[in-house]
Amino acid sequence: MIKIDAQDIRHKLIMYRRSPLSLVLLLLVISATAITVSVLLFIIGYILVKGIPNITLNLFAWEYTSENVSLTPVMINTIIVMVSALLIAVPLGIFAAVYLAEYAKRGNKLVEMIRLTTETLAGIPSIIYGLFGLLSFVTAMGWGFSILAGAFTLAIMILPVIMRTTEEALKAVPNSYREGSFALGATKLRTVFKIVLPNAMPGILSGIILSIGRIVGETAALLYTAGTVAEIPKNLFSSGRTLSVHMYVLSSEGLYVNQAYATAVVLLVIVVIINWLSNFMAKRLRKGNGVWERSRSIT
Figure 1 (cartoon, rainbow, N blue to C red):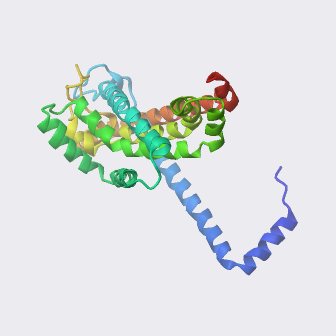
Figure 2: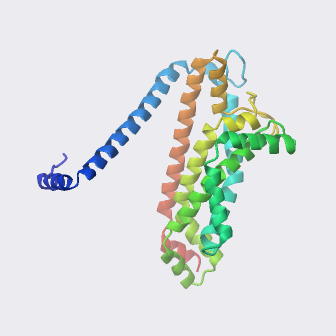
Figure 3: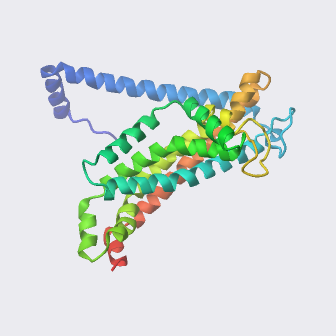
């Protein structure tokens, strides 16, 4: 049972009488939280109510036809695009963040320009990335509407998110960890990869989770780069639609609205599973990252 401390409540009432603005701010925070949670629950509930009754076995047929509007090819395309974009963006983002946080000198104008550029790129609408991908990867490089063109476009989109979250995660690692590693005779490079990066991994995974969410939910950029072919790609230069593009195409046609709701349910489930797996990995890494155990391993 929850115990109510009358003295604590009386103290808070006296404080709110002295500062009515604090009470107003508290009420605003509570109201904003309640509204946000209510809207989120309403959206999820609406999708589930509309989509679950329309999920059938034909929706998971291996080949797409106009009768079954199968999700299997677009689910495979989604996984391929997601993995390809992450393979491109994650190494670049992490290494760039390591340079900015561990090696770059403070006050360097180049570093400040890079940070300003990444923050600017993070706020650009996705349709701009789609047009850039259309002009560069699809047209100039001759890749056409392909999985590879879509993956490179999405990699550029998520690169600022990975860079900023990784840099902040690296800065959050206490300097005492680095000093202890240096005291044991470790080099700068070994300290970064054996001490700093493992302890910053939960924060890095948070950025990757955000990037995965943006990849799975992206539509505009992929319409201009990956195309809308609902087939399993033969190679990375084949065109293919993802789940979000598939849902957009079905709803825009007006003939498969019920199947579009079912697609939304599948997309929601996939995002939840990916987030759960990422959080599970982050917790396991956090438990396994003892500072002194890492310090012993480098001696």
